[in-house]
Length: 245
Image (cartoon, rainbow, N blue to C red):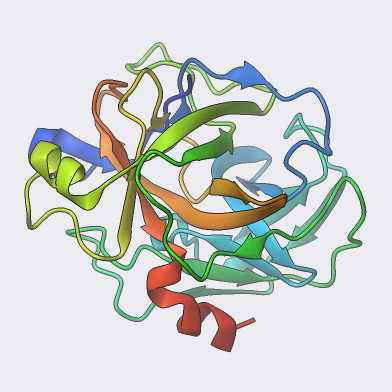
């Protein structure tokens, strides 16, 4: 489905921060994933994010831009070039334990002036619990649709469904120390993430309610779909997220 491209980091299998979705499909309605955010600088998309309240956007620490005001938050659209609503970031908080070398604690939160919440722009509930391996999750983003220098950022939001992967199975691919308790692996079965999807949502439908399980963090440098990628797992720092809402 789609591939998330990640910021380059020297890790096992040459991992890098996730930026895109490979083998995905076009999202045709703004109501499909109304929590989806495009983060832009000078009109160019660079990371994704998720609306978690009228004034808070969940993202990844490796996406943080300074000053915060250099980032425009775009919501309510399937084409990042044409915002339904847009806000200038007021502040951007990175998790204090973020490690740029290991990409651990890859969490950040953006504060914006209040969005108008409706059917096109809606907050997604942050997951407070873990979900079992094999649970189907939704990934969305404007990341590249193929690896390599020829990969292009799509204008239209992409989506794919992919299974969650257990810690044991993910460590079998990436190594024991690389996968921490703050990481939720998914994909590796024909879809994953790549450049441009970073910070974007990994969501699970829990009995009719969508829950934000994780934020696109890192994966294979070639956006390979045969091995899982990692999302920063929100349940692991749920109290930190709630304290900054």
